[in-house]
Length: 382
Image (cartoon, rainbow, N blue to C red):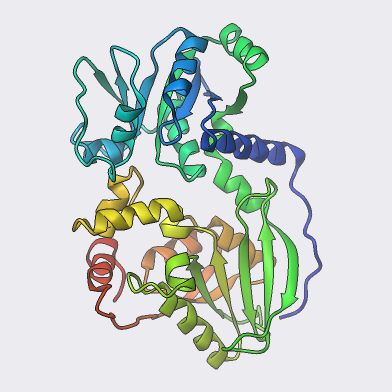
């Protein structure tokens, strides 16, 4: 594959600023600090992540706004708790008095408590996914932060109330529009930042190309074996990182087998690319994946465990993969996968999938339930 110049052009300043605003807001939520989310219409929302909230933080939100905060959960989490029968959008819970941190975390985290805690006197309201009033975007921001998707929110009158908070309380502000566009902008801003020859056991003629988004966030890698010809359909594997399977040989999944098997198959074919994508646990992050493992040990399957945490069954997106392939000069692939959704998503992003190459490995005595769930509930061709 012909060498291409580095680096690629930097994204437009407005896009970079939008990415930085979201990344900084996500960092504040992870630290237990509130952030102000500005929706397209209606009041701004002062938000505090449920997972990192403290009693002092909850009291501070009430003191800054003069109002008891609402608790918002994703539709999936609300269904798991028996509080709703609709997994879309979010559920707003309005308590009569200031909630304590134990109640908030019990609502957010099924590994603490599977059933809903007592909610006497609370009003519940379902907010549709397209409401665009800030609460849906708050839960999206918690997902970007790799936190449990639940938060405390208080509407803040605009513009005076919001301006006063920003000026006097050292609180970051981020637009709901920026949150909605974060994944798309991050993928389009990917830049090749390093490349090196890295001989591996499967193929000595291997090099790794590293890609980083403009906000300095999650980095993705392309492992290029041999010299793929962009004029042909290049053998490609999209592999989501799996610390437990790839690095320490966990038997709970087949990820390690798929990684090493794909590299060996590409080497046998003479050339190809494995994209190592930073979307651990089907996009929910390593810590949440470990929480899901705890739920699976209670006989919930992979899909149910993710949804009990408040996530979708599969949160991965393949915008970064499509952008990386384009920057490598590849627009037509033979995709090594058992997941038809990968083929559909990649084709929808402008990468032609000329063929699907099966990539199946036998069960090992620990992952039969996991593989059966992939086949029966996620449509994998196993």
